[in-house]
Image (cartoon, rainbow, N blue to C red; front, side, top):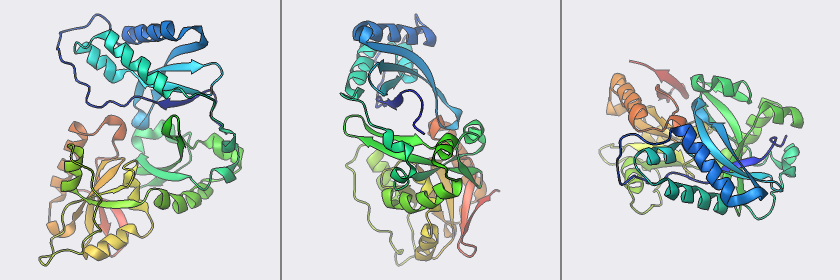
Length: 331
């Protein structure tokens, strides 16, 4: 079933916006700021567009405030989230400058013609690209009641359709129970399709942590080398498990046979530390790091470094090479 109303794609991602001036207090609260942006956009776009504010529920029950610009003849609506822009406003950034940023982002995100989504009605047109991802069960209890999912430890496997358009770029459509009803399919059907597609469309990567950190701090992106067998001293460097897209990459731990192959090449069981929904840290058991210390590492990172909507879990996982199974471990 095609989602009702417009198809909303975020067109602004925060990348290093920092206020140059710090002021104490602001003239407008968040609601007033959002209304001011909405009115400013409405004045610029005129009567041909409808500008409205909408709260958008994200992963982990995170709610963001977005401004949406709707063309009456289009089925897609560019959405700009205002939460971080409001923080910039509070920190002294000029509100007219922020309005210009939103206006330009909406113009860039507005397609020149409607996007044909009729293909989504037919399961046969969709099943060859369905993928899965992992999210936290407890923090998404309300969402999980409305979407097909498979429980996995303290997580849930859910399904999405990766969507790309040459004008608006990449997006994804989360599969809801209403889609299954329209298609006459089951969760098992989704799992069978996504199990075939996800690893092909989103191949796994086992990356040295040092090189990932270099890339994140601005160094040139690298082509990751094959997983080493280990040096003469048996040393196996700390690795990040993700996929080539670095999106929903924590799900590589449920790729069939993948963790088993890693354990064979390492000749070891190993711990898995959830960094976010996008990656895991792999630590060989032979490193003999205490579980309590690993739990502290995970919880500390989640508190200080992980965006709320990217949070996956506070638990430490353990892949037992004898059982060929992932388990939750605790100190």
